[in-house]
Length: 151
Image (cartoon, rainbow, N blue to C red; front, side):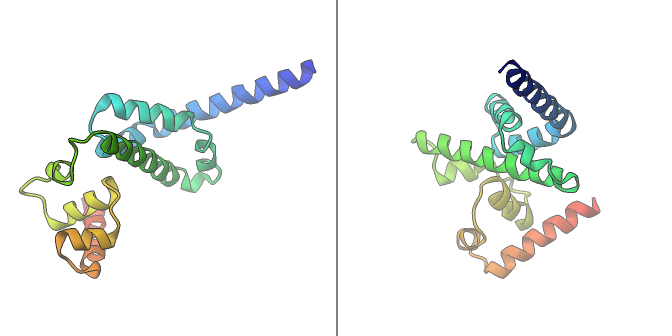
């Protein structure tokens, strides 16, 4: 019995160390992703803590070559879930207030990427919202990433 308790305790210690190691390596990146979706730092920090204490985090580290991408995906999903729950509970937040973070100087690619990545709209919903074809939405996302890579 005592050996089982020690084994469980040592597994918990290993799990905590792994979570801390992942936090040290990817915490700032994940926080940046979360802040982009949830611009309130206090709420973004809560999501960050939830991310790095979640059991799904260790699934992200199973394939080391994909760890960063998986953490980005999980951070985005958690941030979108919190933001949508906050939006639903706040009657003041409407479509017009959520989209007010666009700058007059933003190009279509930036707007499409924000709607897709940060706000979680599907390509069809973006096409309808911006009165573009679905193909043009996909091209805008491609162009955004191409510009991002070249800068």
